[in-house]
Image 1 (spheres, rainbow, N blue to C red):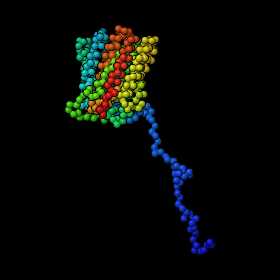
Image 2: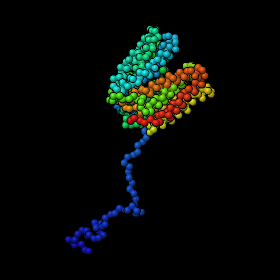
Image 3: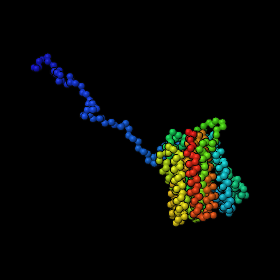
Image 4: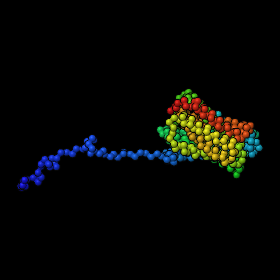
Length: 442
């Protein structure tokens, strides 16, 4: 229509945009419907690499400091027995006397160590570990002076027995990890693997360092250096109070971890596993019989150390008892490799490779066993429980050394390698019989 002066600028008709029907979204059954694209709220987490797991482990404040102190204190554990044998045999001309003195110290440790660990659980790591270490260091210095002045033989036994108060620094370190990552089983698994690798490293380097010091300086140098390192490391470790597990009040009449269901069977497994280590060492020394024996044994520890670090990066087991059975089965199979190498070609190179492979079963077995100890032991008695495991291990080492030595003497060096195979199989049978029925206490 013609525009007039008062006419609107825009005529409102049914076709006008203002009066047009509202837009309606297509229905889901409409072929023109296209589902909107949704942006994920978060990207999936990348699986951490092995080194990242260990880096995260030490992200908490104080963890690096107490680990450094613990490593310094743990290194002498592989030095004392070798230093004592070299020192006593050199001064008294008797390896039998040296062996008897070190065996007495081992027996005293088996009796005293659980009591020391019980005091640690009851009164705290710093309050007990420091004075216990001072007593042990004084015992080492007394042994040094007795040997230096050629004192009567009975004084050597008394002095070395005093070193039995040495605290289980590895157990105290594992207790700290279990406390710091009590809500993160994967981190505890990685920490246990790191601690086992550290054990292997210290027991690999300790004897080498002790032998070098005693040969390069003077016979007492190994014992003196070990005592200084032990005291320094424990003082540094105990000074890290922020990471120390709190003392949990225990009700009167609290039972010992030995009475926890499944614990006796697990300690029997540790006893048999220790026999594997003790017999393997003695048999290898007899079979190689030369300066290369130390290097060949170091390969076994190196294999265990590497396997422990790799094992710490895998997912922790939901059923620890079942994984322990698998580890023990693998250990039994791998421990037969040195026997085959010795009975076959007898080549030193073949034996070294077999020991390297056999060592790879050691750390995973020990890590899984220690994890099961932590599961079975009440939190307030964790140090005591792990020390009982170490004591059983030491007892097995002593028994395995004696059995391996007897077999070598009566059946030959190559036949001695049957002893660690039999000990590993016994550990597997004991685990099948008892530990799979154990119930965690926490």
